[in-house]
Image (cartoon, rainbow, N blue to C red; front, side, top):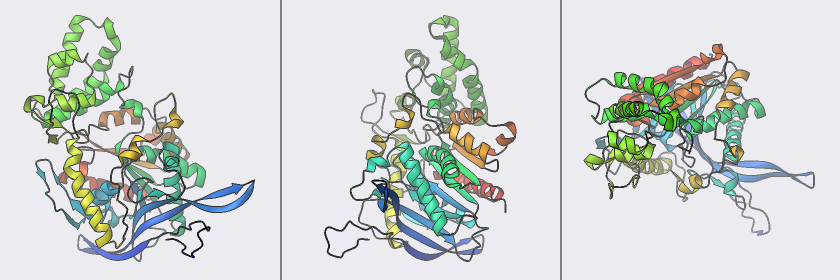
Length: 487
């Protein structure tokens, strides 16, 4: 990667270190021959010194893995750019969990895969319908800031958008894909990024998308951040609490659909009114509200009274199964774990992420070297706590983070832009009812609301770890890409 002329005064010249390999995948007796391109793409910035052009200087190296079907017409073949969230998460989850041609066997609730783990072909891969480009933002995976550059320039809302947007522009240009149907797919904070990117790509580069895939969406943090004075999240989380309590057998043998319908109705109408009353709430109404919440959440009436009818999410995950000396997962409330102290209101870790993170990390580190033939001695940052903890939202000073306005603006400017939203009922990080709330408040004309479709799964944040959900989700997204490609 370096210019080794021996001149120590010469600046380090970075170059792309991309590696290509050839592979096949059989999908429904159809043999797909494809090329994988793996490595780091150098991002550069035009530099002016004293008003004069001083070159395109390297700013960062971004790791990506691209899969392109051989012998396909690039003007007809869709391409999907995918990334996860965090902030600080690499794209390994969508890559080896849902979209990619190879997937990790991680197991599920009650049957986690033991180490060592295994990789298998993924005949449900989106590659059967779209080329794929998995992007690891700076600070995740093998992506890093260039020498003498500041990682902080990329560890924030706008810097992240601009760097990921530049990767998409560069890849599209270098691979002759401006006339291809184009999609972006994000999970969790990746949906925040996706909403912002839809607007940035259009307004800065004239790159119009066919579709956006939002998995476990968070478009407006005000719908799920438990901040003082903001009662909205208590309502938006309630149906998720009900789904998790139902899964753990605390709500009797009622069908899940009935439980969710009751929770949604209460969360949409009576519960917000109850919370808005404050000290004006009568004793009778308070008693009735406590009883209703207990019947929906599986929590005791005494606990609900002590928290003033307001159940913050980590409190719920540690309280729900305290009587069994278990905690439940935040990313997926179906998972349970153990804690060293069952008297506190936080847990040692999220059992839904610790149950699968080892499988994904091992699979990626093996796959990238043994099958994609890309050697790199850097640690692959699956979940970078440093990146997450130092993330900047300076653009939203004195306001909550939202890209709902940017997504709506992009959809109004590009009326052909379609949006697919996927939510898991037991996702306690980005609750599905909060997503519904934000979608209902997008500033769109009625005719553009038809461009949004939603899908629900009986699992959590990474709903694809649940095998029936993975199979169905793969079908749902494949159909979305086909229908939105306009080919």
